[in-house]
Length: 216
Image (cartoon, rainbow, N blue to C red; front, side):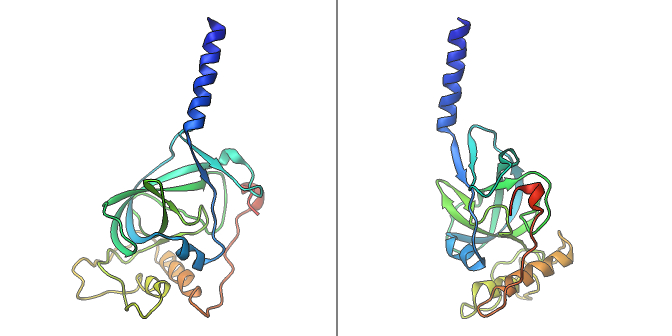
């Protein structure tokens, strides 16, 4: 019986592992690719963060990333406020990301509950994935909710997004001033987006400590 029990446990573990969902780490080469990969671009409010347990979710990393145990699947439950590109009938969606949980420094997706942000996501089964894992692909929106974007469609999407943190439309009844994040971070977000307009010279993003993250 003890031997049979061990075999049954091993079989159950193998079965669960085989049924689990594997998320491959993905990254974009530039901001243009962040946008081109996206099925849905929207402003939303993060309701909660969760780390789904193994073996239901597992991570697949490229050869240049190490320290497997520190990479986990992060799920954000996000309430949609304003859709900028694409369509989604649901008011709330789950967004998944392969996320580093060790010590680090650099330009990465630091978020928390209640934060309003801009999301670039692609369809993945019934849910969504960020178009880039861990590295900056979620941009804070600190000027409150908007029912529409500044400017018109003759301007690039990145230009219109960059202005959202500075735009106060008097005719928009949903607009309000709030500061869930430091003003400096709002400026940095707008500068990131503005730097990647057509013809703009890109700035070098800060890099994390490769020794602590295993990311080069």
